[in-house]
Length: 414
Image (tube, rainbow, N blue to C red; front, side):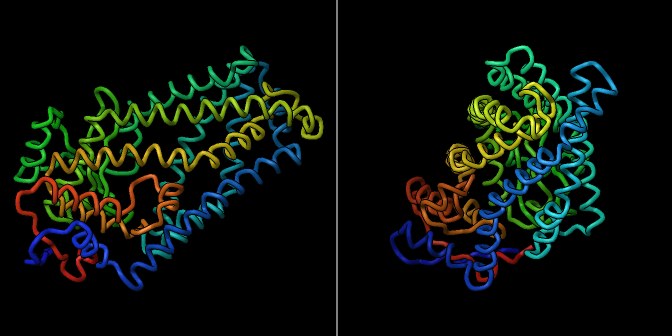
């Protein structure tokens, strides 16, 4: 069990207390954490470029137009033609990018000891995800192209509404029908821990009739929890790694954070943020895609924006837009996460538990980035930011705050 050393050093100093935590991650462990996270910066770029290359190949060799031509021979109904085209586009794209998916999702994760599944189990989950995409993507694309045909100038606005509708349906149904495909969810057993979580929730009028534990240990060792669902399906879930690898103070700190997301209505904030970015991206796409099609459409076999064969063109435009908007998206989500951190500290009153969790997340998040680096690439506050927030809360809210020096090696505890 994790033990902490309390240092009797007189007056509590926030920076000294923060440094005591940060200095527990040194040498090869810090270098490995930094290398993994910094490599992710390049994955953002290369992942987008891989997608753009695949879409360009589908256009350059008229594969998209050939698929649409086949679909038109199957049916004269526009929505069926679009759905068939989107189905084939999704399947071909997944097959062509499979080497990239294997590298980023399996090989690289194994290299950094962040994945416990063997290849068969990992591939099985990828297959489930692909099967869902082959159902959902054609539905979304068919709906958006129906809007394009009916409102060729303002389709970007109506298309945003379509995406929003599908997001809301997914949020309601996800915890019930999608999440259980990948993990088993069971009620957190009764006992002192559940009693303490429920007491924190009751104090802030947060419903806690259902607290779920899911078996993520079969996939990896990462600790996590989340708020998911909407309306009758909303729930707070924590994974078994959090229960097995951390102490009660850390669990309460994490659950306080997740309760913050619920209490501060962050689900709606994040939906609004994402829809705003999609709206702007679709607007830009609605202006750029017609220009590209007028110039290259004959060469690609694409007639107009409303032609389902234009799907790779729209995907290129939207993909590049979302890459450019990554810093804005990260900053907006990071703001919500920071608010939840502050709420969680007030609710759970476990600043050292919060600091320890922040340090544990250094397994896959760079602990101490520069200010610009954090703004551009972090969708959560960095570990250093979170530890400092916890120590500042401790100084401001506890009558006699004590300096706590984590026992050497606690980050390796299971």
